[in-house]
Image 1 (tube, rainbow, N blue to C red):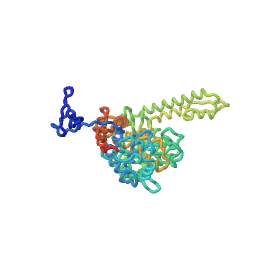
Image 2: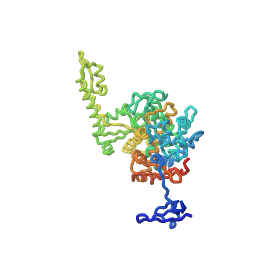
Image 3: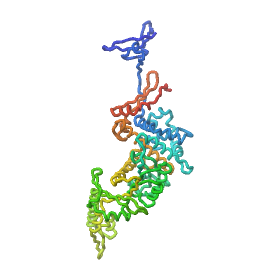
Image 4: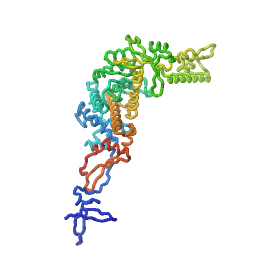
Length: 539
């Protein structure tokens, strides 16, 4: 018969449930349950303390943090809705694991996905065998998401649904949109849409693709992404983007902000056709820009002056006949930029002249090559087999009058001031930061896919990875946890998961945060909900 026994050890009382038995004629006690300093007779809900041993560890914190963000925007459910599984794992689950590997995995790839997932708590939490993640299942998932030949394009519908779920976390919809394009280079030569082109990565000798993104202007959330051939020029991407935004994303109204380089007459007419307002930077090679620079004097008193990030900016608004219509043109002048441009020009001229003076066996061809970057200002002549040069001060003075002057074309439904147009235009740095973080945080380059459809899916995966990062950072800010993704993920990665086995053979898991911020991440994001429920006896 079992009974509760109290034992005093070093002045403290400890309680156990014991039973008596006889051995070699002597009565002995066998401990059945140990309660520590809690008396189970006074506390009927007391749970016996069992000895546990650690049998393994799992990667947990950063994966659970991404699970939390994905659950807030219903990512797995949305992908499963538009791309239901036909074989293997649910498409949404494999897609989430692929995005997760892109964000926190080391040198992510399809072949390493299974090994990466196996080191985490995900197989136990979702109850699947990580060995089922193979290169073939990755190919199948990509084909389910996008296949141009069979007209399968679930990417656009998934993107729209995810954006609609994400937006309420940040606030109300606004009509300000950004559009820009970047490039990502390839390791290899066999992708049909990869070509040599203008490289934003400084990899002029490598094939590349171009990637266009439309972004919410207020919150910096990506709304769509489009992959273009590597040698396409920026202006040629605008038509497809404008119609895609208008008719696929169903954005009836919008104020589209684009960088200079997109400012062709065809593109502006397209935006007029779809009914979008716009603010577009204008290149200096347009005739009307040259005329405006010529007639404007920064020292006059008819400029609107305001401060932007500690710099004085001068603004002047014109209404000009541009591309067949009366349009608003805003010129802005930055004294700091003018000074910088003048100093750079002087340095280049001085460097070219010093190189010419120190050159041996100088030929006309060699001289022209030396002054290539400043050929407008350094004139090369050959007289009597001798190479001479001179600085064209008239050309320098003309250039200095244009320094610091830039133009924008604007069409807005409501009349807004020049300073508001300026601020809206330069808020487009959000999309530049998006490109930078997709390449750094989400490992977008180099592109290693070869099938053009898989390249499109790969870029989509990276864009959704960036979307999850934005969600996590926003939710962390609401919970008053300071830090961007790199800091949050570094801390979360250190939150471990210990797999323990008790004396009865059952497996249990315990989250192990090590610092204050790690405990805040676990508590405020509720990461304990992703603790695997696994108590079966080991085989």
